[in-house]
Each structure stands twice: as structure tokens, then as C-alpha cells.
Amino acid sequence: MTEHKQYGLRTIPDLLRRDVVGGFLLIAAAVVALLWANSAFGATYEAVRSFTFGPDSLHLNLSVQAWAADGLLAVFFFIVGNELKQEFTHGELRDPRRAMLPIIAAICGMAVPAIIYALVNINHPETLQGWGIPMATDIAFAVAILAVIGRHLPPALRTFLLTLAIVDDLGAIVVIAVFYTSGLSFLPLLGALALLAVFGYLQRGRGLAAALDRSVLPNWVVYLPLAFTIWALMHASGVHATIAGVAMGMLMRTVPLDGASESPSHRVEHLLRPWSAGIALPVFALMSAGVVFNGLGTVFTDTAAIGIILGLVLGKLIGILGGSWITTKVTRAELNPALSWIDLAGMSLLAGIGFTVSLLITELSFTDGAVLEHAKSGVLIASLIATVLASGVLLTRNAHYRRKHAGTAHTPTG
Image (cartoon, rainbow, N blue to C red; front, side, top):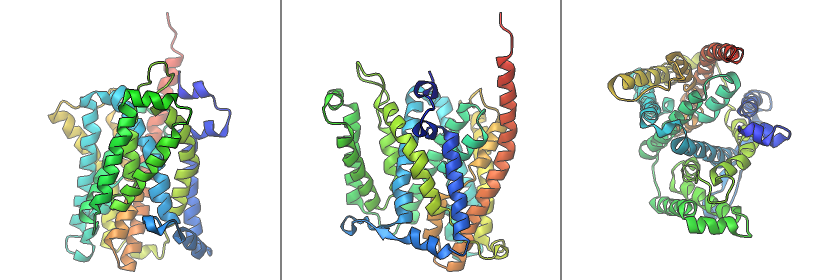
């Protein structure tokens, strides 16, 4: 029984559990942000997203934009980590030969864009430090666009994209921590890791987990303060706080206890998905997508912008598709039989959407105002080109699978 058949589609939360609805909301919010930032009310937009609030004593006096990118986005990353955990324990990623492929593809998809950027900027030391910008795929936008344009594509393609993008983002965060972080606070990081161990034990310890399930208090009374503390400590450590969401999602228990109808993993995903699709992702897009365009002509003369565009559009395609193909030839890894290489080519282009982490590394790379704006514009232009090219390929494949499914449905039996 599918989730939609089980719960129906009668309420707004039910609608928000559909990837395509969340995708439209995310894209609409990004468009509004772009129009707002480049309108006569652009100063108002900047004032809203730079407004700060929160307890300074906890290092949480953050801007609205930071709360959206580090806080709200952690909810989405929790759901993604949780979904991946289900795939690794019960889905197709249980097979190491198939799990290996998206992981290696992600590594190649980070290395090739960085190399392309470095080659373009090798004679420009003032922009060379931006080599990490085209490494990261924006999982939120990529998954949303795949949901909008690929309703008939094999589910294995979405799983491949999720796995690749998570590994990609984790790799990019490591790059930030090693190469773009001036000071990493180890004490908060150790605290976050210790509480993650507690979180995992609460999920794994059968006696304790059963006691929590039987308690008169709802589970969120225990888990919500614990999750917030883990997130706050991760943020204070200097590591991107969304990693806390991924880690907690991967620690969720996917097997129900004796007598339970569903696992905590499925129950929490059902509860949180509407909040993620209806609030977290649209607000994040609204606060992050407002890149101001000041003279596009100068963008294409800046080697930083050129390196970013080539890295995201060509580098992701070459790295992911080429790395996957070579891996299947030299190892036992294999492409899911439900997919073809042209499907993977379309998904590789879609992985060229670099937004959240790319813009973050851009901010960390450049202090020169003109270069910074050109680099941000390069991220946005590359993401737009990648979306258009990927849509062309994947819409064609979507039509192919729709016809295939229709033909199968009308094939007489007996």
C-alpha cells in the first residue's frame, strides 16, 4: 500500500507530502526572491533577510537568512537522511554494488568541477580560492525539479540523486571545514557527537525505546530538545548545522517494535514532510535566492564566474556520468536495471544546480564586492542552464516512461 493510498489526499498536509507540490512551492519562492531582490524594493528584501534575532549567549543571534539556511534547512536534511536510511536498510541500496555507484559518482562529480574551475583560474590567484564553489549540488532544488518534471521516471533515479547529493554535500562541508573555516571549535563538536550517540541509543536500545513508546509523555518531549541541542552545538562548532539533520535522520530506527504498526522513521517522516515542503524549503528559497544582477556583460568576463558555470554545467556531467560509467567497467558496481545511461545523463545535468552550499562557499571565498557578485551570478546562471538542459533530457525520458507504463497497463493478460 502506497503512502498516498494509505493516508489519502484530502488535506493540505497530505498535498504537501507530494514531491511535485513541494517542488512548485520551492521554485515559486525562488522566483519571488529574484523578482523582489531586483525590483525597486530590493533594499527591503535585503533588510528583511539581514535582520538578526536570537540569543547571543548561545551564538545564535543569526540573520533571518542564516536561520533559514542553517535552521529550517536542517529539517529537510533530516528527512533526506531518514529516507536514505530506509533505502540502505530496506531498499535497493542494501546491495553494495548499487550503493557504490552513486557514492563514487558523487566524488567524481565534486573533483571534476573543482579541477575545471582551477584550470580556468590558474593564472588568477585572486580568484583561485573559489575552486570549491562548483563542487556542491543543491539537493533541495534538484529533488524539487526532478519531482516536477519527472513524475513517470523510475524511482531509482531519485534514490541515485538523493544518495549522490548527500555524499556531495557532506564532501563540500568537509571542504569548508578544512579549507574555508578559520576556526573550528572542537568542544561543541564533541558535544554534538556525544549527543548524537545518545540520540542513536534512544533509537537502538530496545528497552529504552519501548519505554519511550509506552510513556504517557509524547516522544517529542524528549527528542525535540535533544535535536535542537545537537543542532545548536553543531552550529557553534563551525560545521554547517544541516549536517546535524542528516546525522539524526541516518540514526532513525526503521524497524517497528513488537506490537507497533510502524517504525519511528516512517512516523516522523509522515509528520515532518508537510512542514519541510510547506515552510522550511520555500522560506529558505525566499531568503537565499535573491541574487542581484548588476550588468550581466561583466559576469562573462570574470574568470571566477566562467569557472563556476563551466564547473557546474560541464564538470558535473563529465564527473558523474563519466565516473559512473568507468566504475561499472572496472568494479562490480552496476547501474540499476530500471535506469538507462541517458537517464543518468539527465540527472547529471540536474546535479549542476548549485545553490545553498555553493553560495555559502562563495561568501567564504571572496571579499572583493565585484568578484563576489559575479561569482553569485555565475552560480545562478549555471543553475539555470543546468535546469534547462536537464529538463530537456528528463522530460523526453519522462514521456518515454509514460508511454511505456501506458502500454504495459493496456497489455492483455491470460
